[in-house]
Image (tube, rainbow, N blue to C red; front, top):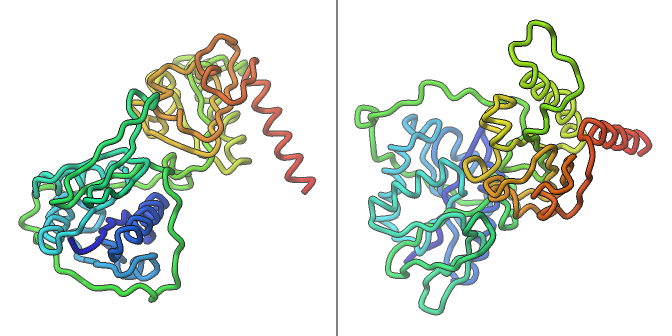
Length: 344
């Protein structure tokens, strides 16, 4: 087994924060096993991005077929690199792209894949024993792959310290050829519009989330609003939660109930059927705290709950709880933060 490979997901010309966390975990593992750390970077500007990554070397491919990290050509290239170089382990961020890419490649080579990894320990025989949450995060389990083949791991967000970046050019970069040409690829990405100006839930250190209670907004909907409750909640997300998030540099999240009711887009959903997050601070506003929602945020470092119902399940999980009207508490909190910033 030759090295520890880390597939590096990129966006808009840079490695995403979770990729830096994956490189950090890879560096620790590589040092423990006395193996080189190799970053894999595919797609547009791969060489430029790879030069500043904290790795012993980087393998890059900038072929046009890899633009937007299309699954088929990326998986084919990843599989070929694994077969040729037989790395001890292949790590990737546990994003949608990371999971589907490693699943495709692991199936190609007949290897196991472990996801939601929050801890890694090398065993004397070379097997990697991992820790990962189960039962909606209430328990942790250990599992391990076989050291006789490359071990594929997808890492949980914010579970590992991020690697430090380097000055460009410090990391040796080697180009590799693509495996597929355009005519070999069945699918194509027509459009991938970016969510401009928004902080990614998976990357956010602070998240402000709203739930079904957002519809209790005292603001009066206009006469032409098709659904007053929906309008009130949408208005609340925009004019109550968003200002608080802006003061904190936070992302906006939501419960499934809020998403299903049409209060906010699915991209903001936190929970078992949404995104699993682990921020330093999670503020739950008007969220009762169903087990499905807890599955997506229970590993947050600090949880603050704001709810009118003192018996809401979220209070049993929260580190701090405020019983009251979120439409009174949140604006007051936002104002206090603004005042403190102004005083500073």
